[in-house]
Length: 455
Image 1 (tube, helix red, strand yellow):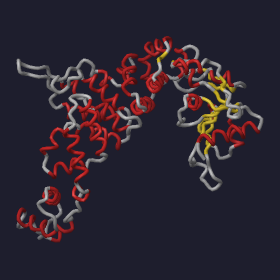
Image 2 (image 1 turned 90 degrees about the horizontal axis):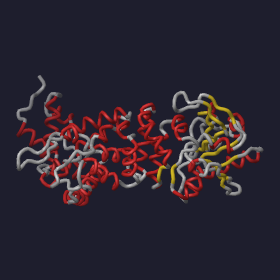
Image 3 (image 1 turned 90 degrees about the vertical axis):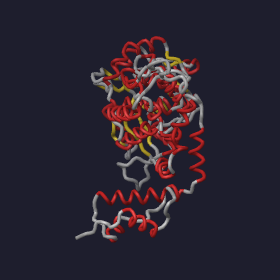
Image 4 (image 1 turned 45 degrees about the horizontal axis):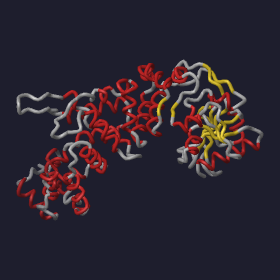
């Protein structure tokens, strides 16, 4: 069962049991915009206990806040394991106090949807849809704001942001994603409260930033983060790119910030999160390594900016609590982004090892965006594409000719020399100098003879 079907089923069951039930929030917004919703939410006057009675396999993940997750489970499924679809069902409520800046101190159930929407974030996210009649309920002017292209906080903006500081970044994300303007009072509240974004858990900030980067409007999103004062609070290393000039012969587009924005603008929608963060951070080492031109023939330099940037990218990703796997990939994108300039001169073995990097397609795409956002030359990009198209995979990743057991059989003692010998064999193999086991043994006998033998 798909999420939409499940949501309609939930509404029907609740209605048949005598309760009110509506689709609510972002799914209604997206339906009205003729977009496919990513997920569906239901609002009802049934209490969480009653929802769980009607849907025995539901998950009690937020009942204290009036929220139950109803999952699509067959009778044989594990009730602790979400099915192929899930829908959040929330009881109409009003929230009282937000001491932690995220969760209400006290929840009071409400009887009407009009009371419920007053606690939500933005008018365009506070619309309700009756799935039986397709009637839209709008108590806060959300439809007018959808038509006008406006992001407006419900009620008093400072109060809404005080309830959850992350809403400031969400306002930026929605404005970027839909190409909307942020209403003046809402914008002024964001600018005023921007320093308080530091009170939000770093994981939630990371996830919201990742959505900005991957939803197809990353440039505008980061411009709004900068203009609102949020950027220096969450990513000061990116904010410091502004005004850092670059050599015009390589970067006619301007400073590091402009170059990064151009890359973000070209970043395809739904890009991998690691690629998106790699694009954002690839030149993060330039501001601290900037050296102005010296003498009449001198030029701006960023000596060791790749090495510095790689360390900084790792530190930023650890601060944002990325997984170790994502940190490794993002750091690798930063560490290798300049290597493309040398691909035409690389030895075959070096080039083959280069294209064997994990998720190499992300490295290649970052390089393409880097070129298109600076000098515009794609010769090295095209060179690698041709190499990958023309080189059989078994030549890029040939099977090992010898193993450690083979070396032991030849009389070598296990130790650091093993790796040296095996690497030498692979190097010659990748360069086309040997292709058989016999060739490999001959190479060993020539280069490492007599071998160190066991006593």
